[in-house]
Image (cartoon, rainbow, N blue to C red):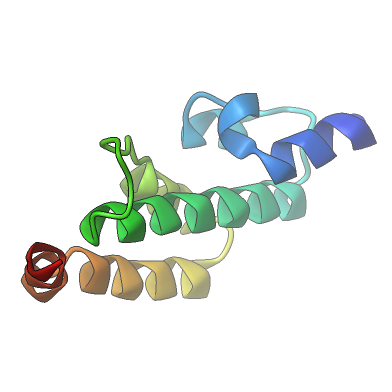
Length: 102
């Protein structure tokens, strides 16, 4: 993958790839590049879910977070575990109750 295309994928992974599996299958990316892109995308997806859980957005976010965490597991199991823990917190009933208070 050319440097400019990699930069675009890193800045906005969802505009470069349809699914996390597309990152894994990309023949022009090294494993370290795949890991970085998946981490960036997971961070974006987690932020969207967090904002949606707190009713900070005017739209229903379509999240690939579960698939991203599964894909990330192949390249960085520790990061995948961290994202699973935070995902659980964001999706918890207490996070939803906090949303209803606002």
